[in-house]
Image 1: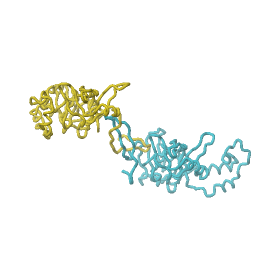
Image 2: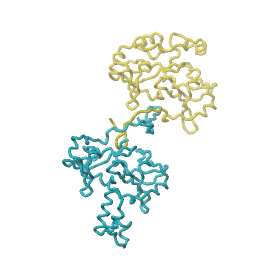
Image 3: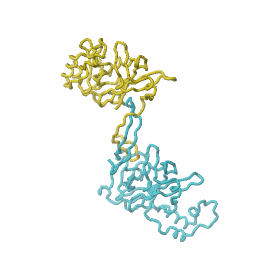
Image 4: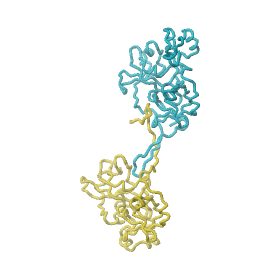
Length: 249
Length: 238
């Protein structure tokens, strides 16, 4: 099913029928264009912890309950790697910048109470060694400017396939209205993502290559079988979305 | 789909080229338990008559719009033979209708069974009327009786709108707290007596008391269909 990532933010994450946390972000790689992690905020305000879950663990997405079911136990989710174990590019750059300027914002869990010396740029560079230069945060890049030959608009969403977790397209819209006129851009039309300018550079002549098309969030894109139950008076009682079988419908 | 008949009363009857009237009653056969006609009261445009529509001409029921579609044109209805629904429909009238619309001749095997007709009231076998044709409005006031004791009043009928066969009779009775309903299969119905206004059943009081309460809001009809969802996982209107 084609999904907007924006619509999944804030969904509850349920492990074995128990709510573990909330989906707060998705990290994807901009070379292979696949989602690598779902970022889940677990715990309460005191022991809040962001963990990374691989998209392979994601089961059914229930839009009626606003829930994403993961095929893990409660304990397994809580024991998942912390968000700091694999940082998106924007986070890596922020850390480097902070260390160069001597800020300690990213060096300790609580910068106000910590009296230690901030790490030197070389220490941070050492820590970031091996970090993926292609890992991008959806939350970070979703509002980047899209520039082709001219400015196309601001990013509003990223469409993914919720089976393969491949990025299907980037949505851009000229207006700031949530349902304004929007375009979808194929990932193949992306030249580079620029953190410094908060922009996404697209290939020139993107229209000529057919890598951009009109887009509507209300488009009927996902056919699914639904079982509807009616009472003796012919009124709809409730409807269940049936699990997809094999290669789908 | 299983439907209750009393909910369908008053539905607008819509022909291919426009509305022809409203559902007023249903006539069914009490031996085969098949629906035989829908009684339609036509509007002023069609000179306010009552016409009978047989199952082959019945189309889809659109509950959301309270609409009953029929596979006829307004011209067909205008030219249909006049029916006096206060009397049982005679064979002759029935044949006139079937010939007119090219409907198959209804199954009449059971009505010539002498063993069965002997069981009936003399009153009803007399004349050339069809003694098996019953009006839903009439029957839905009858008492349900087992061995001389009343179980309740027949209040409603459940029909299958694919085969147009009656399935259950809904019996209303006074429970210890409020009046409730239970469904009994039409197979357990013995005899319908017009003269006494009673329906006999082979179901005993003990069996009847064990029946679950009939809930017209129970989700009994399951239908599968393909629905298109949008990027946000909501059903898309298209």
